[in-house]
Length: 367
Ligand code: IPM
Ligand code: MG
Image 1 (cartoon, rainbow, N blue to C red):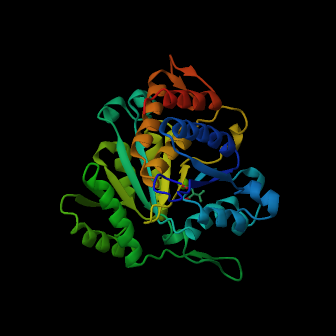
Image 2 (image 1 turned 90 degrees about the vertical axis):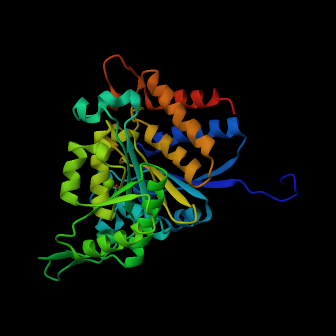
């Protein structure tokens, strides 16, 4: 009940730790969320549900109906990672990765935001030459997430000798993701680079036409178009030229991995998958890293930063989101690193210690 006698329900978060390192990194992110509750006086209700290979082991499906329902009833979803060699032999339709697509499609999460930036204290971690990254990198990949080749028909001929995956886009699908990109650009560097393969693909020609039309509604934002092969090259040649990089589902999958690597470690990059009503699923962009699972060496920062994105995008808690990002920045400045970011002079800590350090830094913040 609030002061006006109206019952206010706590915000609900469905937590899906998943496989491999998923549970350990999500544990640290929840520690940080608890600190935010404490410092800022919020209450979030969290419920944990199985997804991925562990869900398959438990109940025969990587995306159990109850998990999808719980997500639909929540305000936001926090996901760790899914998949691992144990489930590689499962048929395509049953693989853990299908759970991700089921969540994206089932929840209508068409807009995937993947910010790739270099943290000041991690400049040395980029594999690019210092002169290329000296001006900083701050790219937001806006990836269409519920259309294109991922969601088109996948067919194999009766004799098994040929296969086909359809890439389909409708004008309305392109329009809504383009609007998201232009809206994001308005509050950033005011530049959208739309990536396609319009010299070959018909779906890309439609994409380019619609993006061009939407851009007319945003006179303050500069638009340029780039072929995907060139974009892959420019990302390593001159990454600072990019602000918002808008692209379709599969190109976005590939380019966001590339963008993450030039920032130093894929272990740092969060993501948000959104629809228009503010509901979102938040997850690190890296995978389940089964080779290092359970060893307390995974980097939890991408998941912690995904919580910051959740606070900002779904709950409009901007100061809280800033506080988490500032805490991460302080911890990095103090020299603490997980082993993926090992560098001379750094103090290497484990997953839990990194989570504790960020939690402490949040708790030290004055409201
Ligand atoms: C990602 C992943 C997924 C994708 C896989 C696991 C289905 O690579 O989120 O980038 O291709 O979208
Ligand atoms: Mg990917």
